[in-house]
Structure formats: C-alpha cells, structure tokens
Image (cartoon, rainbow, N blue to C red):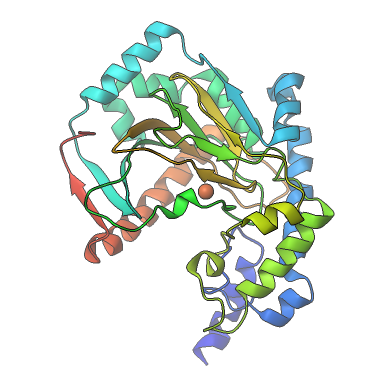
Length: 338
Ligand SMILES: [Fe+2]
C-alpha cells in the first residue's frame, strides 16, 4: 500500500536527475530497462543538452565551444592574473576555520562549502566566485545558464588511517546525463598528487556507448543479490579495460597541469582521479552545476537560481553529513586545511 502511494513520486523522478537503480523501483525496473527506459532517458537528456548549448552559444567564443563539444572539457591555464592567484592561494592556505573531513578509501577529503555567508568572510574567494570569465564558462558548459556551487577541496592521499583503495581512482561515469564539474587548481598537479584523468570525447553518445549503457542498465537493475556492487546501484557505472575496448575509446588524458589552471569537464564522460604517490596533497576550488536534464529551458536569472540551489543544497548536505557523522564516516575540525 505504501509503495502504491509512492508510485507517482517515483514516476516524477524518472523525469529528473535521479539516477539510483536501487532507490527508485521504476528506474531500477529490469523489464522497463529491457524495453529501453535507461537508454531513452540518456538519449532525451543528450538531445536537450545539445539544444540548450545551441541557445547559449553567444556566451563563449567558437574555439571554446568547439573544444567542449569535441572533448567534453575546457582547459584554461593561467586563468587568474598572477597577483590575484597568489592572494587567493594565500587566503586559502591561511584559513583556519571549520572544515569537514571524509575518508574515501585511503584518500582524506577536506572540504569547505563556499556558500554566500562563508564567501563574504573570504574576500579573495568571493572575487573568484564573481569572476566574469568563469561565470560565462560555467553558464555555457552547464547548458543551463547555471552558476555552480563552490567548495574548497583539499585531498590528502594515502591516509595512514585507511587500508582500502580510493574508489574515485577507478574509471567511471558520474551519471546518465551530461553534467559538469570544475576544478581550479591551487597546487601544481602531476603524477604524484592525483591528476584528473578523462577519456576525451567519451561523453558523446556513439552507438557502442548506447549498447554499453543498455547492458549496464540491465546489470544495475537485476534483482538484489546479483552483481550488487554499490556503484552499479547508484548509477555511477564503473568502466573496465574491456569496456574501453568495446566503446573504442581514445587514450586517456592525464591533466598534469600547473597551479592557476581551470578545468571544466563533462562528468558523463569516462574519468577518474589519477594515482598518487606517498602522502601527497592537492588543493582545488571545486565546482558543480548539476541540474534537471529533462527541463528543456535554461534559467533566465542565474544569480537567483544559484541562491535557490544553495538554499536547498545546504539543507540536503547538512542531512547527509549528519548521517555520515553518525556512522563515523565524516568529522568536523576547525583547524583549516592542515
Ligand atoms: Fe566522478
């Protein structure tokens, strides 16, 4: 009976960014996926993504748009003037307020959510958030005219507290629809401190990619007990060497880049966090602009929409963090990024 009442809600979520095959019995229904539900969501999301990008094309130069469409990423070295970058880095390294820490495998992730209140206390961060060139890049690449949510993120690799491996270091896709994340690197990045790795062009829907997605959707929606790996249930499919061969992917690109480089990448493409050596660290300003892929329109008021997203996101994350903290998977410190 309870399930019957929830049915309209689950049905509504089919037309949203919901990706979990476990939490939504419609999205996770084996027979519906056998009839092509997952693939249909994928195709519609991609068509609308391209449609919105076309409408937003005045935001960016043709060269940048083409790079994003071809490869699924845009790379901007020397993004800030040198003095501005030095001031921003100084501000972040000197920060000694509260942050959250989570352990994923053996990587400790320290994060600070740069909401409006927090950004007011950090003038260089505020300046970065208001950067016009960044705003145009994110608004175009999101395909939604969306300003992202901002975090400061400091990764500490090979934490002594852990023995498991970092799941972000496996090749994967984040979700079923095109969406973007951004990294503004505060440190030089090379093979020692987990460079971002992605397969150029892998976000595009080739016939082989569609066939692969179809197969993954059937694996993910099998009854409980069969192939129950968590990353399948949550819709972030893992990608093995055989999958890369099958999809005839290009060789991976490893973003070993100097500090003051901006990277915006479509995380529907295949990617991973690169390897690291020893107890290396990597600090970035991390950005995310996920939105409903089935809404054909983009927001006419990016600042207002950003505030609304921040409002809901803060509440959602507070609940999630409470749950993680209760289970000992997250802790707070007020020492800054030590
Ligand atoms: Fe990812």
